[in-house]
Length: 511
Image 1 (tube, rainbow, N blue to C red):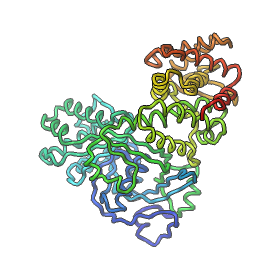
Image 2: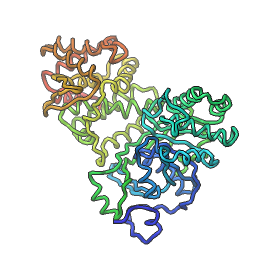
Image 3: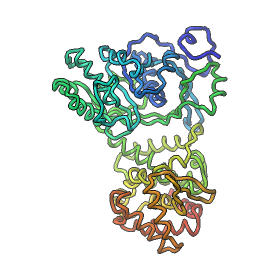
Image 4: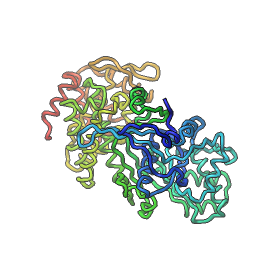
């Protein structure tokens, strides 16, 4: 079977009718330097640039830089930057699949093997944009980093070295500054990256003029990205390969939904005209509302519904959404409790929530509940607690199902025993392993040891857990009636079982 490469496109290969093959020129200039060659950027940013190129609205390609020593650029170069992307999901309720060969990547560079080729990119006046996704840990300050290393150890270090070489090569020309667009999933990612670059410039005793050039003539944008990218489909690759008729070691898969919120000058939307090809990219002066919407609705719905669904005996998000009771439970949490707690435009919230429901029901993605349960306490604090507190502040009473979701989370650890760095716990369906910070697991185990099956004992469990300021950064017993309500739900779960409690909540709901 032939491998995907540019010769395959130039020859007489018979591609399947349902795959789109690139038709725009292969010799477009390099305009983007991208740190990261992984599945996400290839199914998100590089796919978007490909869409603009198809319409002749960007006319540029991407140089991909491997941010760590081991990576995929060798394979990327073997395939001449080409790879197949399959986007799958529900569209208007119907299963939909889009297959396309993406050709927006020109080449890959491994700076650990070819530093000179990497730094030479800084001399190219046509490269205007830097894009990155080096994981959340990638935007981090390394005080031991050095410009004498080739390459520096960290991503910010490599970027600083690149910018300094560009500054020197163009003699500090204000017109040669870069637009830097990080996609790492940390709050204010652009601001944080800029701060580290300037700190490294100080550490490395780089000229003051360079720091002024970085501050005044380079734009660091804060962003929010959203698309589930499932990557290389190893479980179905043989069947996919047979349908395609060629071999692609970089084949990538993801969901249909995508959203990119970019906080920055609107005039940049002319240089990067994503919206002109119908892409879901939002340019804004303040990304806070969009971040709140995503964290509270998408992430919050996951975190608040998964403990109950898992204890109920379900295994995946799709199974949860298709379940008659749990599916309604999730929808009620979103529309009846989370959305009313958020002081943003209701239509914007409902539109996003409708998309979230469709995404949760995506039949092509198996998202296991046990994996979502990882680090649930810290997730609950960031994603669900704000909805509970703001709902109470607005309406003077507690949101029923979100309050229950706290009890369901606590109930996950009931009867758990810490073994090594994990906890062996139990649900009606059988035992399972919970992984989290060891002190947290030990705390939950110790609290539950005191439970004697009584209503008062359940209240004491709730009170101790909610009062642990190390977990929540505050004493949640201060929320009027919260401990009593959570304790009552814990007692009901212990006596009647999770199914009876959820069934009652759903039947007594207001949707």
